[in-house]
Image (cartoon, rainbow, N blue to C red; front, side, top):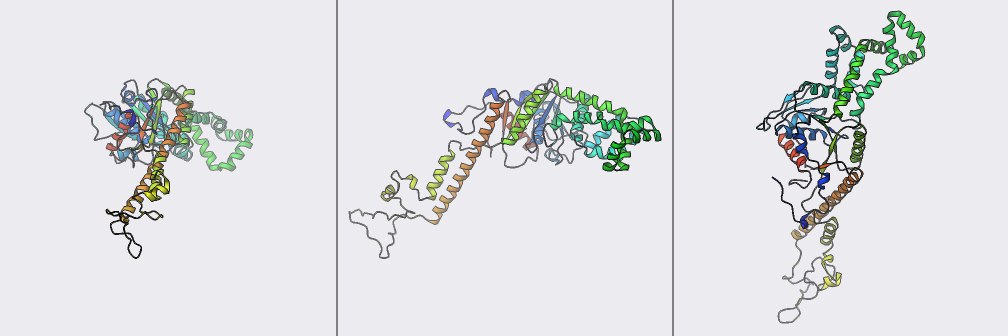
Length: 458
């Protein structure tokens, strides 16, 4: 159901809505049968995992068979989907609205297990056992720089080749840079093609002691340095690993190239996720430019955790002035300053002496002998002053919120000025983390709504 447009005078002057030209339409994207892969990318800590899960749930409840691949080690995705744990096998999520015929499955990348599967699939049992038991391989598969990103690409290729899913939603690794996901296949390919690998492979190709003699004579300087750095046993483990993996190196490069082309295909859509903060949007801008340079299809930007206010017409300046008014005896309210205050009947809290009250008969009212005001003169009670202090505090909090909104708007506007071609949707900040399907469903609704002024925005 479409929302009725609000009157112009009720528009929030700080959080301006995105223009139609900049609005990212989420539902048409995930409902399009031609969209087969959605990649959520961006710098760490901006909500990629939650965004990916919410998109997957929303697509499934609109009739698509979806699998969400996450690389989040915190296991928050499993908890929010009501699954005890996720592993390298897709698991069906229960409790979704499947009236439209959709399904939702989720899995978490097991980097080492994915590497093991590749070895087992592309090597004979004897050679596979030799590789899997090799100490250097065990270290490489568990923590080599770029291995996690490469294995995420491998798993994506495996899922797509099975043609079992209408839509694959990928949550990219929490890397130092969002670009690591794109660079990993090339880096691993460079490693496999590098001079070090060819040097280490030489003894195995020559064979036995003659091979080691050739290596020691021809490459004595390099191997001497490697032996000091790596140690003799580790160097032998590396040589054994390289010899066993030699026939598989071409397969790694071929699959990496195929997956890279898959990411460039029309059925893939990249969503860059960012927070309305300078560093996050700077990283997002860099990623947008990199995707364009690599001819990869960018659907748009998800600006996550955007703050809103239900009292947007009260500016920060007016809120601060009102707070000072309450805290400083309400002098601001008087048109003539303190002179006006002296003539005002409402004078409690003032350092000036009030004018004497006049009785109905015209005679000045008398003061008590100790100088106290008559009993019928209004005075501020402790309760009233407590209310004023509380109100002033709330006004100052509101002023801080409005300043935050203005700062977020300026940051967003700088990005849109730099990249006016990028469509955008805003997701309101929530008071806490998402822990269940209802929370993911709420995030999905906010993604589709496209702006931060939803009910419940904090």
